[in-house]
Image 1 (tube, rainbow, N blue to C red):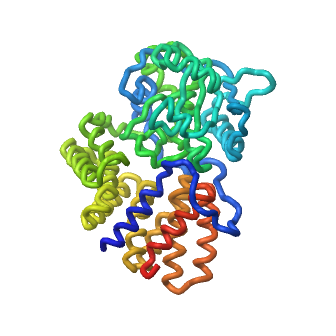
Image 2 (cartoon, one colour):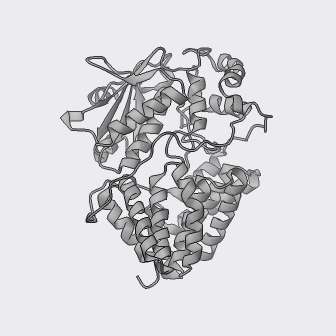
Length: 450
């Protein structure tokens, strides 16, 4: 049990990209990288009354909780470009991923956005730099967006001035998105989606949101159809920069009725805001700097607060998932119980979605390490479609590698080889080639006798 849990904890910790790609030997004869095309699978209909509440909470507050006095957006066509910082070439996947995002924003959010041309100064400039350089100025940030700035040198000149204060804007004219270069293609794409979306519209994150990148649980990694609904409303002709919250709230019902016909549903009621004590406990459960026992204590506190508040939404489920992860290296039985509870809660809310797939990954890894290959295969098979639908290559690749090991253990080497190759292809996009080799060895080590 101790060996199994230690291996599972190592693997699952590695499923979240947190470090630059600098180590590990590259596997030879790798298949071509595989990514995704088009939009992720649609989510359930978004009730317009809930969308209106989410819009107000996302658009009139910052992640710090600070309120914004006015509605702001870009007025007129939006242009976007990639900066070569100090002449360095951007990551190879950034250009195609940006072009794919622009197509989606034009089609789904109805935003008049395009790549800038010639000597045109772009509305949004995307700059990619080594992570260490980014974090020298914004410690702990994987990526970030700032207003009134065009590029890295402009940011350095203005970073200690009021120009970078979103609350002082009356309209948006310039913004810069800063991404790391020395991380995986998926992490660059994930940053690109969220930060460009924030440059265009919502500046807040809410743990209570379903099916959204604007949820701090970081499970959705690309803009969802619900995110596009919020962005489409942001750029509706009935709104304009400088409006007060009351003016926006008055117009939202007709905007959403017109722009989100699937959302013409009964109002399920407002969800209470997340309490500061719950947010603090959850952050303690997730911090990589805490000791295992401190993380476990924080996770248990998050579950206790969610239960005491009577929440039956994303926050309870995520608290249980955090509890399972925190307990892996300390209390194996508590971890498994928490994962089962988290999976049941997510399925009651969303069915077989990407959140329940995250839970199934945890259980499949444990089943494989415990010699229960058939159970590992069943769990992986259940989770793989949701991982693909959500365009999460990290989750999908890990599940495919686990599935391959389970098939090998069940005496199906040819099928296992084909699945393993598919896992490698998505893994190249998920982690990059050097880290992929480490992930492959970690998954292989889960199998008994490895």
